[in-house]
Image 1 (tube, helix red, strand yellow):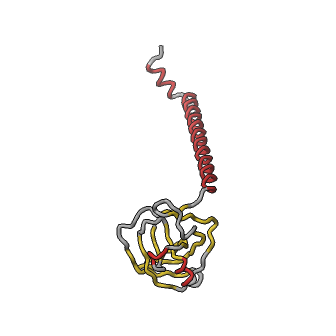
Image 2: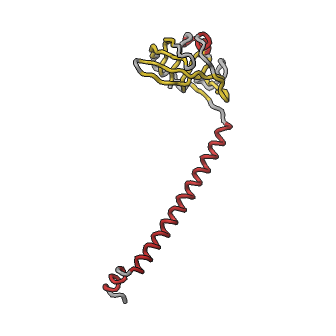
Image 3: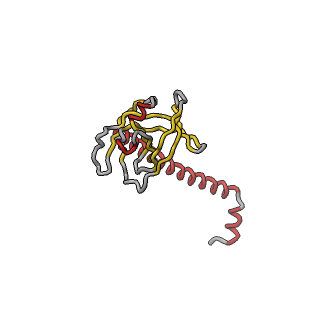
Length: 170
């Protein structure tokens, strides 16, 4: 039978503290190993998801009809020549990105870059857009009320809704 005093004496002994320290180190080591295993599994899962996503197509879809059309005047600056043009821009159209009409880009001689993969354009009803896939992008600076931001616009046939203007729908 252990006396109350024996426990107290053992705790004051160096050997007890060395033993307790070693026990805690082993516990920490086990926790680290478990956490490292979990992280390795997560990394493996992310790599698998990335590989799977490489084969998937990127799709642009109009998600809803806009409640109201908000048109604003913005300045666009070409990144290569720094020449600017003022345009009307439609905000929050329900689309899932930033777009410029192909006719507008050609008329104003913006430098188009070819996309690595074409982007499918789907209508609200799920049908493929007759304007075709998005094959190009344009980088430019947007100016609005003293604010400047560099943006990438996908180039597509927007139809008559924009009358050759810019469509900002992020």
